[in-house]
Length: 299
Image 1 (cartoon, helix red, strand yellow):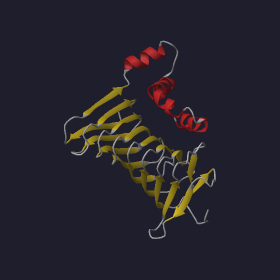
Image 2 (tube, rainbow, N blue to C red):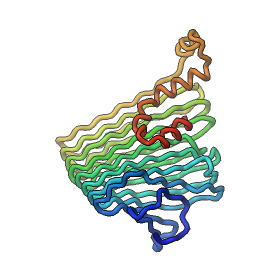
Image 3 (tube, one colour):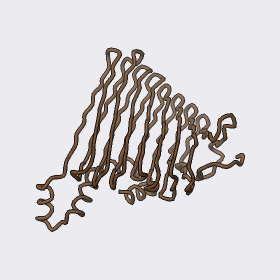
Image 4 (tube, one colour):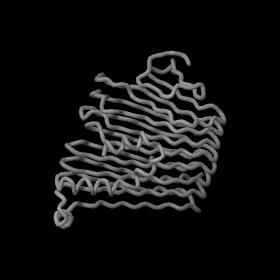
């Protein structure tokens, strides 16, 4: 592969994919999985440890019939004050992408990111996100079905504590016919943490036969948090299935009394509640032992 300076390391190095630089656009990079290539090992993109501001764009393209698992890892070694990041995913016909985002960046970091995907005929794009780091996160994500029978699934897990400000705006836009997919957003808020979850299932006039669902769940462990969850539906055609749900669970004195009666102190009780609340989300990554260990460490 051609050598050039990039803001992340990539493992494993392989001739089965192509990493290139877009010289027409500053700080822009592209990762391509060629046609009918089935990658066995996950690709890990680890953002380099730096205290300097980061500003870059990443394009992921799975060509027809290919499949891959890609892990985007922002570790606590990323101490940038400001991060501006854009990513675009394109899944061509009959391809399958699982994309995992791990954010445990420094508590000094302010992240602004814009993510989107285009998913073509009978392709699948699954995005699983874990945000436990950064001082402030403002994240928008739109997954769009542009082909017939495309599937998009998005899962978010986040925790806000110690005055962290976490804002996520996620949308599934069904443009092609017979699309399918779900958005799941789970958040834990404690101390003086702030969480804002905006979700939208949007079925366009051309998206007949599509089915979309949105679920938002928040566990609130402190009276000093600010929590907001806003689900939305926009349906512009008939013959579709769509729905949404939202719930906020507050820790109360009765819960603490229940734990105390069994000799469990408040801090340990809160940790048990967090682990139980997020337990099902760990099942989505249990096949990748290293990733599962990282997420458990973040929790």
